[in-house]
Length: 190
Image: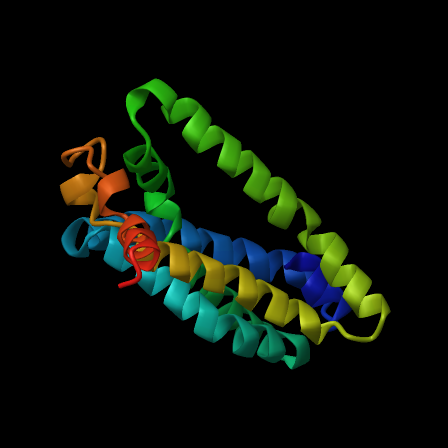
């Protein structure tokens, strides 16, 4: 985000450092608040809110940041994006832990995390700068939206973890994904 604000929006590195520090301090205070919200509404609803809002808002947020001229407006936009991310960050660990039985939990959590970070987090800057150098920087906004759309679909297929997860539920998560039922019904011709 810092490079984006310097290169695309034209802010000085010092101004961007201040904007990002202020936004990250606000982000830090969001964590317990959004974690409490997840406790009240459930992990699945929280994941759907995160991925749904991110899917809808990432493109307008990035377009707005691309052309913003006021540091305060830039702060509000960055903080808005981080507030959406706050719907995921306080529950990230528990979501993954609920999905895997204790015997494979470390591998089940660690391997997809490493692959996801390498494939998307590790390549995000490269993809964004490559698209920018080709004059199609805005395509990156749609790339991010597409990745979040996959998250939304996964959240929709995810069962209620408080009821079926391995930590606080019955451990019947495989039977309750909804995907198995769809595959079985398609195989049976229903």
